[in-house]
Length: 435
Image (cartoon, rainbow, N blue to C red; front, side, top):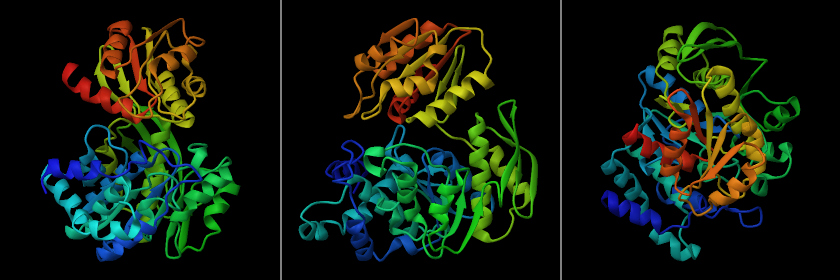
């Protein structure tokens, strides 16, 4: 199977990202469990650090990978969705697989799945195939540790065929309520499904009642933000943040993190705690400093232009939008025009997202829509935006919307492109060649 064949094979599977489940039709893990059994249970070939949470999964996972890689380990990673190319979903040392390696990973699944489809009466889903390919590739190439992001929730997510050595929860907020539940407790309950009998649990900042949802499940050990580890300093620095992190036995002072936004400091603290939980001992100071100093997070408050300042942030829910807005207005002083490029996927509410972005603080809102089956039409976004900003335009194509925003901002302005990872992915691909 070559790369084109791998993409064709994937395209033949039902994609829940394009056609999401609801609570009445949501998937379970029975198919991927059977698929893993036939493949020899590759998800058990190495320890798995399993990461869930409403926001911050991607950045936290990338920091964990950097920390483990600095220790001389070969570290696999699995994430979703991708920004520009599907290869980004399966990584080693935070680098996407090559086309040839990606094709080989998919082929490992394609050689066995067809024998099961007759019994199932259907194929696996796109996400199940990708998760299976990741676990198979990690086993096939003998990675030392796999850092795996949950796609959504936890309990029935296809990644949950693994038993986490460390179960990491970044936070809990309202998102995907049509699938995960209408309350924070219900959402936490779904995410708590990654906590297994032998898991060490690492919990980011959350309400005590939500912590109990996770800690009430049988587990091996725990590290809780504010009790067992914390972030005692998180200040603005040139090019990122200056952090002081505290674990049960160590204090890491004035550590530089080249990511923007106070929330990234929270993610770093959780990542350091996760690695300490994995090994049961503190991480050497020099490893923490070296690792955090080289972290990148594409599409997460990523600066891709300076005149004007152009920022890409994949915030796709109100909590993420609020964090992006806070970072922009508190960390980047600019007297020029402020332009928001926003595109959304259903069932996201445009008004709720605009309020979270603080849209009334922008001079212009450019409404757009990603090339995606669930995209909210640009004119619908624009209609909602009219109540927030003095100038609103709608430009259906993301690349053209970004060009319009850059022109509107002028050299001394700022452009924030956000609302969906799919919008950010298209903008990023366009800006790499045009800015």
